[in-house]
Image (cartoon, rainbow, N blue to C red; front, side):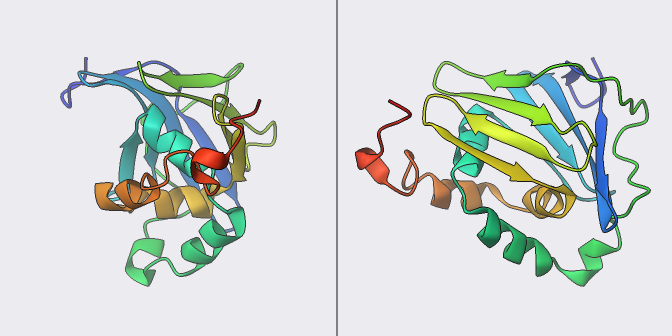
Length: 164
């Protein structure tokens, strides 16, 4: 266990493009499994399966617009030299799963390490996002995810067929 009370479950992987870099890593916390996204010295978030499901049904264009409006003071931290993990490695094999008794999300890292795909299998949604969108997510408060969860089954609400 680390000083923060978490234990790595997967190697940290850097997701990078010409605009910047973030690291992603599954961690075990006292509250359960989380996907940690680290986008600089002050920008990180640990998302549980429910939060990841809520990301999976977001509009990729909307997330890209939000990421483009990232506060310039935070952009300086989001760079190709991201120091999110001291033991960063790029040998991640397979899918990262983050689950709880209520939700399950699957995270696949692109072969070129330029994006990840987050899938909510039970809901039938997925989204591919790059480092800028991940950096924006790392700056969000719990309230943002609560807003998204006002429609917990995605944009179609209860009418969505949940992949069936």
